[in-house]
Length: 231
Image (cartoon, one colour):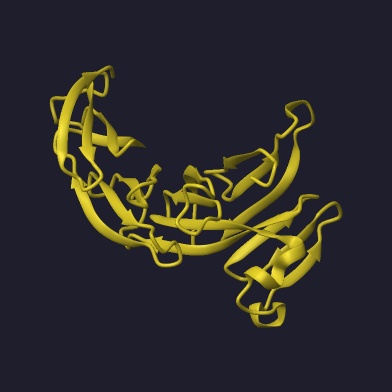
């Protein structure tokens, strides 16, 4: 983005997302660290480029396992805050602190530790499954439909979210998975591929070493095909 290449690392145990500038891999450096107070334990991250985003600005989708939520962040140029923030700094009620090496900004719902970069990633939208731990694990994104597909281990589904307005994501439909446990999802050219593991629960007669499946759907959740895969 903006001539730079970034790596996003989710810290599932510690919480938060580390962002590194890897434009020159030999001189990769810390750019910023961000956390969101209502979003706990980021397990899956998906980057949506500005070209593919409904806002024409990049989006970072953060699926949080413990809170069962999705946080949506977007970059803001530090030199152009007034063009992006709907409120001034006083209205945001943010506090700043010097950590000794980096500047930290605490806005209540978001805590950010700044590096030397020219961007600030800010929370622009959020979705709460209201199902708690395990309801938001791995996200993927489809460009044409502007939908996110999220693995939900609580209901054994892949949840379809409408992101046409990233500030107000909403649940469209849940794709039920009945022959095992969904544990990953990917989308390409309008085809949704869901990785499904064997049940393996005690007394189920199944083992997690049994063969799993990849089930294919369209972006409306209609089943297309299924193939047997490895354990």
